Structure formats: structure tokens, C-alpha cells
Length: 279
Length: 279
Image (tube, rainbow over all chains, first blue to last red; front, side, top):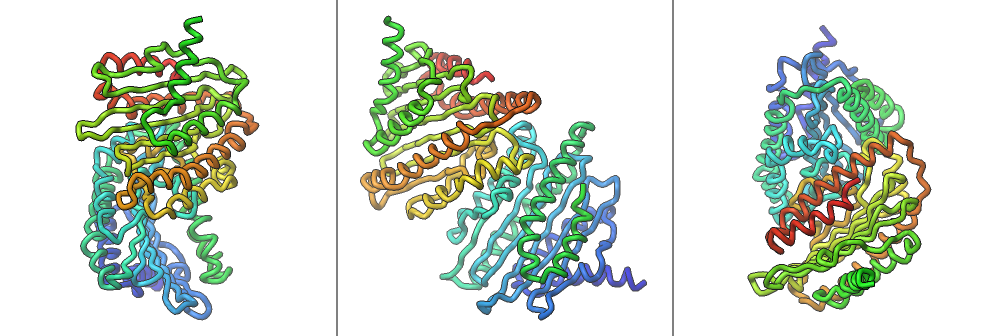
């Protein structure tokens, strides 16, 4: 009883998104709920230990929630990962990262879903919203057409870039750029003139509808697409998925986590994530 | 005698770059010369028919020069392609495209070289400068490190983007985005305030040194790298090279050439290029 109770607390903790603005929290809660509702019958309870579902550093200046829901064997979904990280900055502000990603299994070759909002001040936001391909699209132009051209994904990126405060963002990691799709939304939003309120307006009026439309495209045209994948292609997907998961874990987490949470906590969390990231 | 004479005329015609500004022409001439000098002993004469080395539409409002120099069998280079296209626009201005690209053979897995300047007015320029990878860098992170990280390629893209008039450019073709590298320089330069003179200054002070540095990196660290490529990898390279060449020819030329030069001329030129593009 205590275990399942702690599991439900893990999800509640995730859904609190306690350190971000209301527009930011609303968007995150809506995206997580939409994904969970669509795959309700596929998703198993989160089985992460309680001290990985929620963790912090010794001084509690850095806190984080992590929620991983694996899917049943016959699901196209491998697992869904939601998280938030909050860390006070030496400068007085805070760094807040909220993310939601969904990884598909090798029974399908459709793209994954990645969503991440990174705020280092009330007037600065980096958004990464992408359906990263799981095959080399240079060799599979038909997949480029099916998942990216026919779905008109790029129109959403273009719409967002028409907002004056929105600029293209280039990750400092070349590997992150390499795994992203040709329609990846990677933008930096600066509202120094309009302040925190203008950022709220942009999240509510632009990021919110665009993110939901892109998630809708992923749900309808990728995650739920009926794909026939032969054995050779499954082996290829497993190899490529494994490489991407290892490298992104290394780049995203292994570098910053020890600094934020101390080596002991960081190691515990990374080891727990690795179990799901193994293909 | 008349044939070799016409061949030399073909190269002279290319090197005229007759419709572009002096800074633009100087840059093109320097890049072509640098590439030719480095591979002097490898390059064979251009064997394109004279009416493909230079061609125009019926009313002479569109003219173009094309120069393809194949390399000897033991060269890492497959062929080098230089060209310019000039077309008067119905609005009174003109469209000018100058380009230089070098394709490597399947004896090496190093990236190719692509350089293209597209001007549709004296104050608007699109630059594409890239070393497009020939392998899926997601699966070959060591190659990402060797050719893109260790060579500090991205510093040149970053330097160019610090010029106020320079903005990231996204090709309307998702396939073109897909074949490009994570350090691809794809920018749009607008000098409406500073006029044509400011564009000349930007070409001379920024595009010129940056383009030469990137070409230098390609010559020293890619084209002349000593790479051991096994038979399976050679087959993979041939397949991927062939796909990229066919698709880019289709996207770049097959769509716009008939409109600019009429179907008969366009077809003649495309058929001639295809012979070199076949892997």
C-alpha cells in the first residue's frame, strides 16, 4: 500500500510544477494529461524509487521531480518521461526546466516526441519542441514526406518565429542539433522590454496552441500510425535509439546533474534513468 | 584543337562571374582558384559540351555558366562543380546565383564542400556554406567529433551571426535542411538601411574571410584526411551519395531550370549534369 501511495504522490509532485508561472504550468499539465489520456490503457505505473521521483541537493536549493511511465509490451510507446528541475542561481534568480518526452518502441519507426522549456529568468525562455526522427531521413525521403511534409509541421515553427521576441536557438551541443528533425522548433524568447507579463502572454497565446498542435500531430500521425517494420529495420532502430539515448543522457544530464545535485544524488538518478534508456 | 579551346573558354566564362558585384566576384574567383590549385594534379579538363558550359534562354534574359571538372581515379575528389546563373526578373532587378561545390568519392567518408550565394537584389543575399556529412552522424558520433567539433567549424557560423544584418535562413526544402550539417552556415543578409555598399562591406569583411577559413578546414581536415573505408561502408556511401545527388538535383534544378531557361535547354543541362551525379 505504501508503495502505490508513494507512486501516486510521484505523479502529483510532477503535476505541481511548483516553481514556474501559471501559463507555463498550465501548458505542462495540459500536455502531460493529453498524452496520458491518449495512452491511458497502455501506461503502467511509474516504478522509480521515491528518492528518484523527487530529489534535491543537501541545501534544498535544487529540487527536481521525475516521472517515467513505461508502456505495456504491445504498445507503440516504450515509455513517457516527465520532469521538472528547479535550481536557485548564485545571481539570485533561478533556473527552471520542465520537460515531457515520449519514446516509441522498435515495433514502429515513427518519430519520438520531445518538449522542453528552459527558463533562466522571467524574461528569457528556450523552447525545444521536436519530433526527432528515428531513421536517417536522407536515406528515407518517404518518411520525411510522411511525417514532416504531409503533416505541415513546419508551418508551426514558422508561425512561432513571426512573434517579434522569438529567435532561432542553436544548441551548443552539435549532437543535439544532429538528432533533431528538419522542422525542430528550437527558439529563444526574450521579453526584456515587455517583462514577465509579456512572456506569460507569449506562452499562453503562442507556445500553448502551437505545442498542442504539434503534440496532436505526433499522436495522430506518428505514435498511432500503423507502421510495418521488418526485422532488419527493427535492429537498425534499436541500435540508433540506443545510441541517441546514451548520448543525450550524457550531454543533457551527466554534465549538469552532478553540479546541481551533488555527485551522489546525480548518480542515483542517472542509474535509475539508464534502466529505461536501455533499448 | 577547337574542343580544348572551347574548354578553356568554358573556364574563362565561369571565372568572369559577369553579373555580380566586385566583392562577390573576388570571393568566387578566390575560392575556385584555391580549390583548383590544391587539386591541380587530380583534376581533368571539363568535358561538358560547349552548349552546357554556357547556355541561355531564347531572349537572353537568363544566362548561365557551368563548369564540372572530374578528378582522376586515385583522387579523393569525385568532381568539382562551379557555376553562375543570371536571370532578369520581371520586377526589373535580377536573380544571381553563384556556386562552388566539391564531391568526394567513395574511397573516403569525409564530408563534401558546398558554397552558394543567392542574390535577388543588391541588398539581399542568401549564403549557404556547408560541409554536408556523407554518413548519418547520429550513428557515427566520432565523425561528428573529427570533422565538426575538433575543427571548431561552428565558431565561423557564430561569428557571422554576430553581424547585425545577418539572420539564420531556413531552406523551404526540408530535404535540403536534412542533408545539411549541424554547423551549416545558412543565412540571409539584408542591408536595406546600409544599401548595396554595406552589402559589399559585409561580403569583403565577413563572408570572404569566413568562407576561406571554412574551405581551408575542408581542404586540410576533410578532403585530404587519410580515411580507411571498408567495402561495406563504401557501398553505404555510394547509396547515400546517390540518393542525395538525385534528390538535390531534383529540388535545386529540376524545379526552377525549366522556368528560367525553357524546357529544351533545361533538359539538355540536367541530362549533362546527371552523368556526373551518378555514383
